[in-house]
Length: 134
Image (cartoon, rainbow, N blue to C red; front, side):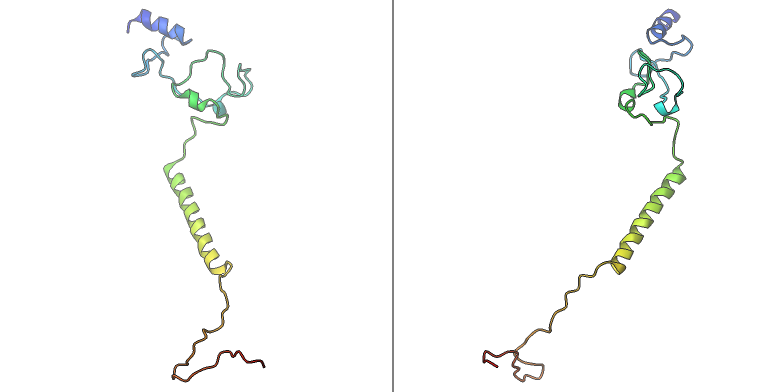
């Protein structure tokens, strides 16, 4: 890309010629670092204050998905150990809750009378009930 083309395209997107770098496989669209609304200045007067953007301000290529999230922060990242630790704590708490619920929870015990069989173990006939009036 020649200097004249670079100057023309950088002016098209409102950038300084030195800051312009084309995004790969996207034509002349600039390769910009995403900055979420949470990272931007609160005291600046924005054209769109809910997303902290100005009119015709160039943004990253994927910005349309992100711009409605007011608290999106591009710079925030979890450390891998912190992410693993939080997931492990969640799993341990859930397993502990299930174990406690199993031991301390409501029992599904239905008291029942012993089965009424016509004979006992020795083979002797048993009268469990009779149709005669008492």
